[in-house]
Length: 141
Image (cartoon, rainbow, N blue to C red; front, side, top):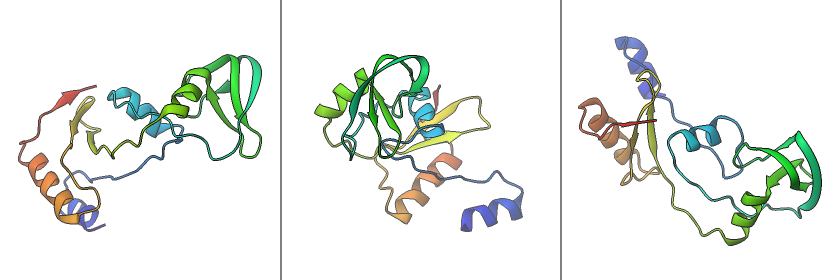
C-alpha cells in the first residue's frame, strides 16, 4: 500500500503484486505461459474421475487448454486436468517460488527475480530499487 500511495502522490506508475496458486486459472496461468515459466501442476486435493469429453466442453485448470478426449474431473469442486497435466501432477516435485516483475506498460517486458525472497520486505524493496535504476535484465514475452 505504501508504494501505491507514493506512486499516486508522485504521478508514477503503481506497483502491483499478485500471486497465483498452482491450480489458478485465468491470468496467472496465462502469464506463466507468456513468460515461459513452467510450473508443474500439483496433485489435486480430491479424487479425479476420468471423463470422455468433446472439444470445447471442458478446459484444463492448469494449462488453460481446451480438452478433447479424456479429462480428469473433480466432482466436488468442478476442477479439470487435461491428460498431460494429470500425468505431470503425479510426478511433480516441489517447485520453488519464482518471482517475476511484469511491466505492463513496456510491451511485454518482464524481469526474472531469481534471487528475491518474496517473504522479505527488504528483498522486495531491493529488487524494486534495481528495477527503477534499470539494473535488471529485461526479457521480452
